[in-house]
Each structure stands twice: as C-alpha cells, then as structure tokens.
Length: 279
Image 1 (cartoon, rainbow, N blue to C red):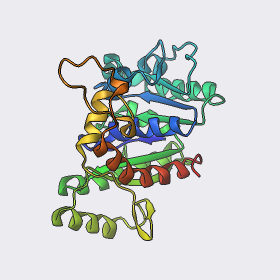
Image 2 (image 1 turned 45 degrees about the vertical axis):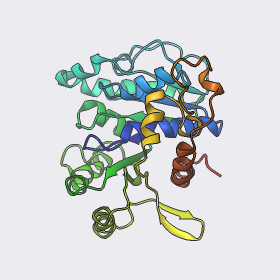
Image 3 (image 1 turned 180 degrees about the vertical axis):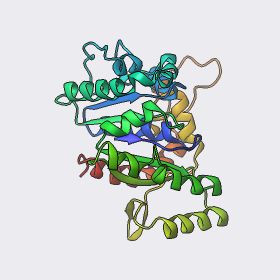
C-alpha cells in the first residue's frame, strides 16, 4: 500500500510509520520503503531502532541493485539523497518501475504488507510506487487548499490516481482519503462536510462504539512526540527528569499518548482490515 498525497505537511509520514508499528504489534511481517528524499520515515525508524534496516537504499532498489534483507518482522529500506536524481533520468524511468516491481515480487513471500512512503511532489518515484502497488491511502488536512488538491490527486492527467490506474496499474485500488491533524473546530467540521459532499464514498467508514463516522487522525502533540522518539504512539513514555539515571523504558507511559491512541486505533483497525490483516 502506498501512502500518497500531492500536498506536503499532511501527516503522511507519521501515518506510515505509526501504521507500520501497529502492523508489527499485530505480528504482521511488514516491509517499509521510504521513497521520499526528505528521509523523514527513515529518520523516525532509525531513532527508535524498532525496525531492522536494509543495507541498501530505495535508490538502489529502483536502480536494480539490492541484496538480502535483514531478519525481522518490520524491515526498513531507507531513503537517501540519490532519490532526487532519478527524475532527471527520463530514459531510465521505465527501468525504475520494472526494478521496483521485480524487488517486490522477490520479497513478497516473506511479508504480508509492504508500506511505501512517497514524496508529495509527483515524479517517477511516486509513479513507480503507484504503478506497482495494490492499494493507495491518501492522508489529507482539512484546509481549503488541500481539499482543492484532492482533484489533482484523483484526476491529474499524468500522475492522478485514475490516470495511473487506467494506463499503468488496473488493479490499483483507493483505500480512501484519511483526514489528518483534525481539530474539533467549526471550520474543520465544515471542510469535512464539504469533503464528504464533493467526494462521496472516498472516506473510510469507521464505527466508534455506536457512532458511525469516518477514519481520521486528530491533532495531538503526542503523535509528533512519538515520531520524534521513533516509537509507537501507545508506547510513548514520560521523559525522565533532568539528571535522572532512570532508563527510558522504566518511565511511565504518557497518559496523553494512551488517550490519542484510543482515538486513532479504530481508524488503523479499519485500514488493517482493508489490507486483509485485521480482525
């Protein structure tokens, strides 16, 4: 599943990383590919040391050069700065797509899920990911600019989801739009209503108790803190006092993180079911 949008700052990488941790918690063997040269997913995973890290980069994968992956139920193939050079080699673009497809076919028997984090500007990496994937999930913030960008994500004449599905990958399916960094304000409620009205059926249904709604990720500082620490949200612990000798693992869990996870979990459960690994 590719996690993609055509706007930056929408929480795409945080969604990818926390979803990878969630799948690991479900004991689902998961491969994470970072195709964003900003390397945010890579840095998060390296900080937390939860994932095993491949000895090669996604640039090398796209160029057809890879070796054996390390053991582990969550494995990261990291990004590097070389990703930024690939768009400047148009004569090799088809080769990049074919190499990614070959790599995924080679490792498919080992993993149940592969998550691919992409750069927000559509280019050959973005197209290669969508051309080889089964599913795409699109985080979106509830601003007017981002809402207007949904049309480009769906209908762009070269990089739009529908165009790629028509020309390159007819099996590609849209899991849905995932409102991210959602706040309980009248402005955002109005934008959510607008999203539902303009793109019916593109949000992910979620049942919270007896209340029917949609998958979304609220604005919570604990999410950013978990990303900064490189850990699953539900395992975020309080910081040790200055000068304290306590190990991080001995500190109590953050109550704000537990509360945030309680809000987010139904959305992740719905996405996991769409991936075929949920209960």
